[in-house]
Amino acid sequence: PLQQGDSCTPSNHARKDSQDHEMGMPTGATALDGVSTLAFPSISTADFQFNLEKASDIIVEKVGDFVNKVDNARLVLVDLSHGSKILSLVRTKAEKKKIDSKKFFTFVGDITRLFTIGGLRCHVIANAANWRLKPGGGGVNAAIFKASGPSLETATKERAVSLDPGKALVVPLPSDSPLFSKEGVTHVIHVLGPNMNPQRPNCLDNDYVEGCKVLREAYSSLFEGFATILS
Ligand code: AR6
Image (cartoon, rainbow, N blue to C red):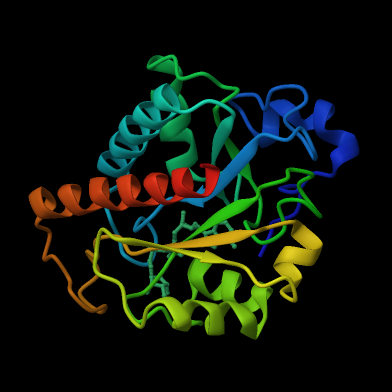
C-alpha cells in the first residue's frame, strides 16, 4: 500500500517534484502529453531477493541502451516508497550516466494507480511475474492482477501458460478492465526475472553470473516488448 505522503495528485506536481521523482519529472510529462510511457518495477529485487547494487547497474545499462535508440517513448521506474533503495541507486547512476530525464525518471507510487493518484499517464505497465503467470503471490504481481480484474488473467492465458526466466509476454488489456478504463493502461508486459530466493522455484543459489545474465535478458525482453507496441 501507499505510505502516507508518497502519492501526489496532478495539481501538486510542481510542488512535490523534488520529492516524488527526484530525477525531476519534466514539466509536461504529466497526464496527456502523448509520449508512450512504460512504467516498470524493479524486477527481482524484492520477493526474488536479487542484489540491489547489481540490479541498479543493469537497469541503468538497459535503460541507457533503450533511450538512445527510441524517440517519443519514455521509461519510468516505479516503487512504492520514498525510502526505496533501488530508486535512489538507479537515480544516482542514471544522473552520472547523463541519461535524458525526459526519457527516463523514477517515480514513487503504486503502479496500478499512476494516473488516478500520481497524475502520470502510463500506457504500458510491466509486471514482475511468476513462472505460472498466476495472480496473487504478493508484490507487484498481486497488485496488478487485482487491479485488472479477471480479464487480465484470461487475456494472459490466451497467449501463454508459463514464462521462462529472462522472458517477457506482452498482453493487450481488455477494455473492460478497470486498469484500462480508469488508469488508461493499454498493455501489461509480464516479465520473469531471476530468482535468488530459496523458497521460490528455480532459485539460482547466489549464482550472480547466471543471475545478472538473466536479469539483463529480462530487461531486454521487456523493452523490446514495449518497442513492438510503439511500432
Ligand atoms: N507498485 C509499484 N511497485 C511495487 C508494487 C506496486 N503496487 N508492489 C511492489 N512493488 P516483487 P520480484 C515493487 O516482490 O522480486 C511475486 O509474488 C517492490 O518494492 O513484486 O520480481 C510474483 O508472483 C520491488 O521494488 O517482484 C513472483 O513470484 C519491485 O516492485 C515474485 O513475487 C518488485 O518486487 C517476483 O518477485
